[in-house]
Length: 517
Ligand code: GLU
Image 1 (cartoon, rainbow, N blue to C red):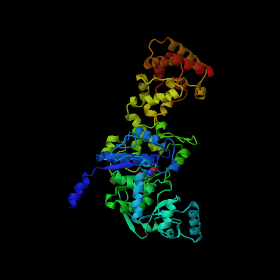
Image 2 (cartoon, rainbow, N blue to C red):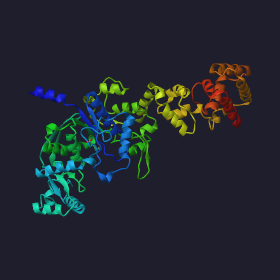
Image 3 (cartoon, rainbow, N blue to C red):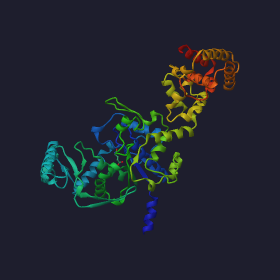
Image 4 (cartoon, helix red, strand yellow):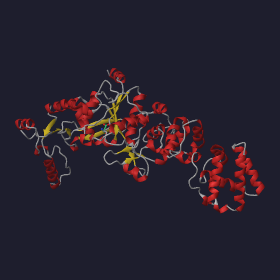
């Protein structure tokens, strides 16, 4: 018998879901949840579903849903079913499923597992005041207090109907009986026991007729045949409510296997990484730039900071998982191949921005520059440097990519090929500057202007020869020339720079700097 069941279970195709509430920017923890969903689905030949959990209309944010699609597209983590693509289990936007939830709430009421509650906001405030005054440890609406409140448990059936008929606003609450020990077999945390004594009578349907997350998540996971549900660890305290709803509505055998993923922690390890930490410490926390439609505030994203999606995914995968071999760089194909839930850690993972940049640096080297040159060209054009995304631009990117940790670094490390330095660091030249150097550079410019072979090698030989002739130190000359061409003591081989920027720019930059000395 067991073997038949096991075989049947194996045949049941894996279906996972990412279920964001579209209320703002997508935190990197959210993208990691998407990634684990995606990897698990791909690894098991299953389906990855995107469900938009937008039942809280008070939290509606213009543009937030589109932003989620854009983030998933940028990361290359495309769902198999979603509000945009549709699928056999739609609609995939909860606000379009309102009627479905109502039928399940009604079922719970009929079974005595839920009840109508007519308490006004003032009643609830009064309840909390009373509980506080009596020194109660909990201020929740639960089995201690429900029989003192205005609900269908304390009112007669006629009174309840009357209220409903005349349109008194009501919510539907789950009736949680104390003393039941619920067990969850979590893929990350193992066996988790939860005592319902501490669980409140959660609202399942709100006064506006919309379900809360608690009812909607259970109904939808059931109807959408979700087999494994990954979500952040912050949802663990709500798990008893969900297990009870599964018990009452569908039976816990049908329940997906839960995985509560560890938190992503602040760099110092104290508490969950928040958007504010990013603002404070100067790094992105959201996947992409997010502009708050109300305040107009812009929060910087990894994409716009210059991360490659491959690096972002790789870095996220390693926040809470590794394959045990010490390997750190994984392509998406490798991640799919190596990923396993058994190796997801229980403990929170500290976010380290320097490490994130290390991943990106690795991917900038690994990736053919043609794949990101278009983005870099856009950065250049935004900075007022006119560049074309062509072969010579790619060659330049190749020459300097070793120095770049984020794509925006190319502006610093390749910008001097396209723009004369506005203010060369003449302080770096001055200590060794004098009549001898002035004479040297004047002659050098003449030589350069007359040069018929403009190649790094020939230019270097000429400059070296001239230095010997005029008895000036070639090392000092090289440094000065570098500051003249680049603006500071940085950059690739200085004669290579001269070759690339050409005769006119080289001579112009030398003369321009000399004028300031
Ligand atoms: N809507 C919930 C959120 O935005 C989803 C939690 C879950 O995946 O069950 O966090």
